[in-house]
Amino acid sequence: MPEKINTKGLTVKKDEDMPEWYTQVILKSELADYSAVKGCAVIRPLGYDLWQSIMDYFNIRLKALGVRNAYFPLFIPESFFAKEADHVEGFAPEVAWVEQKSKDEERLALRPTSETVMYDSYAKWIRSHRDLPLLINQWCNIVRWEVKDVKLFLRSREFLWQEGHCVFETEHETDEHVLTIIKEYQKLSEELLAVPATIGLKSEKETFAGAKRTYTIEQFMPDGKALQAGTSHNLGQGFAKAFNITYKGKDEQEHEPWQASWGFSTRLLGAIIMTHGDDKGLVLPPRIAPIKAVIIPITKASDKSSTEKVLAAAKKIHDELGKAGIAAHLDDRDEHSPGFKYNEWELKGVPIRIEVGPKDVAQDACVLVKRNDGKKQSVKITEAKKVIPLLLDAMQQELLAAARKRAQAMMVLANDYESLRRLLKEKKFVLVHHCGGEECEDDIKADTEGATTRCRPLGEDEPDPGAICVRCGKPAKYKIIFGRNY
Ligand SMILES: [Zn+2]
Image 1 (cartoon, rainbow, N blue to C red):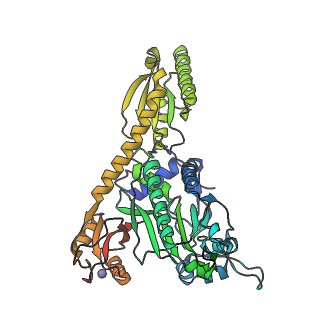
Image 2: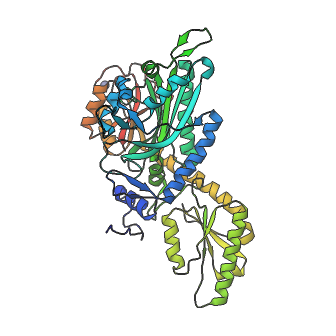
Image 3: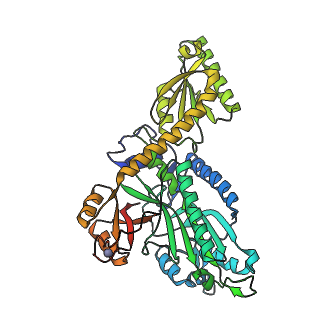
């Protein structure tokens, strides 16, 4: 028999043991669960609600950019991988293969990413410059087999993501597109999730297998680890060559197009939890919260007439909020005390709690409590629908501002190697001059217990004149952020 999940309050504090806190928040708030399938997780309805909010938000953005959704097979023939040398090498260790039933059948992989299977189709579809740009996205699951230990939302063998795959005539168009997308990711992160995100280029070593350039958004978590939350790649013409994608240009000649791919995953949910959660549990940014407000009647079983009045008022609030388009939930379960309900909804991160007791009803009022700071205010019941949207907006802004302040305080400059080492130990993200050499990056990683380059922050990576690499002393190619990561 599997062990039942204990949904009672958290037993650890966030800043004392963040990994344990993180797991408890997810399990007890019922966002996700482990599965009997090794390396895999279950996304429960509350977690899926959040993913759905992200999909809803991003589908609107995709439409505005002219990108359409489509669906390609889960299986990728082995020969497709072999076509692009860097790509096959980059993904070889993490590919899961389907058992062959006969020797004549080609071996099939479960997609670790879909470049190859999509571009085989693109080669058939693209004929002339009139077919470009081709802008396609798919929402799907992918499989990366190397993962053994699940870290809910952050690392699992199978996870959900979106992957955009677009084709252009010129390098310039492709570059512009790749940047447009990474800025959309930053906007999604900051506007919807209230998680600040830094845009930058990856070093050559960290560039996607088969790509010319990779942009990333990096989110800086309170425990001093960075989360690579989305990437956007200029793939150059390598895949076009490998998959024979050509188009007839305006000049009537055959040309090889340029390609871009980009994606973010359910990791974003991990960022929300770590960034905003507190010792009481989850704190959901209002814009992504499936329930914006929970109404809790404060009743006494011994006083029947007062209970009836309180419940009637609670129902009235629920109806009025519903009519105003505010997603509210009335928790009128009579087997639990108000205090029990407060704890439970705080654990689940609902942005606003509405308390209605006999004293409030006597004044036609209710009490609104904000989840992020516990601030209370009493309002007339008829005013609640006007005040709540303002509180939700304020809370969304407060969460982003608090997260930004914390992330900025973690970002520091270092001019010499000893400072870099010391600051990494202090769980900072450190901007340094670097030569761009892969071996030099490996050397720093080995010497600092795993710090890697996160990104060259956009517009802030220009090296100072005459600057040298903080580690090897060669001329610096750029400024780059080092840090630990998930
Ligand atoms: Zn160096």
